[in-house]
Length: 281
Image (cartoon, rainbow, N blue to C red; front, side, top):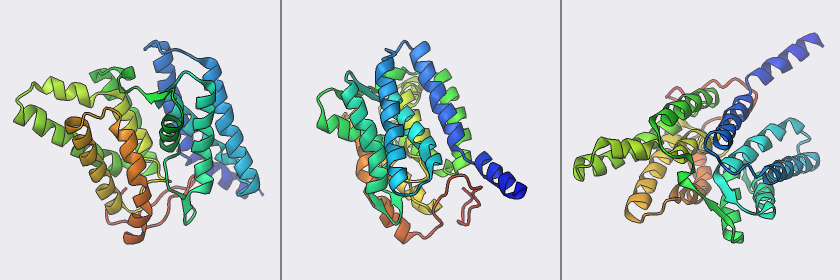
């Protein structure tokens, strides 16, 4: 009995969702207290309540694993950080859809869309008062190091460092070649754009979700590289400032294809991950 209890505690200690909650919560506090965001406390509370209630309801009728409420908290924090809306109803809609799709849209017991991402996209499509504000974080080298350091710690725990690095190298590299090498702009312009808080949260939080990214290292590298290249094209030649959100939504359905093409073990929360891929994750 004692050994089982100790084993359970050990498994919980490996669960990176605790760090994700702390990580995202700290940046929500940063945005509200330092950047002067509108606190909109009723909206945040409603969003959290809807996410947790939906997670518990689906868990009751399916897995009976109520510890998954941690995932709902992470999704709710992601929505608070990235989704802008003046309506409580729209915030609740985004939260309910985000959590529901995890249980409804699945392939081989793995949900297809990043919950926060599909919540944001559907809220924008179904309402007239939802949007993403890439400039709400501002841009600074300090923010780059803060988000980068915290994000690196997070992705090391979930084994998705390759995803973030590939995405940032491809997008940042193409952007550098165009702005600095080809157009002759100052490198500070490039650094300013790469230091955008929304971009960094996207790279370190949204696309590193182990439940919606390809299982195999090689597949994740191809997947993240394609996403980085597509974002470069969409933002620099078509001037779509929120392209990252839409591109992730469009590329997510291809994840099952990558999982069939590159065979690897599916990620499991609360379990120490030992990579069996050719590249250490």
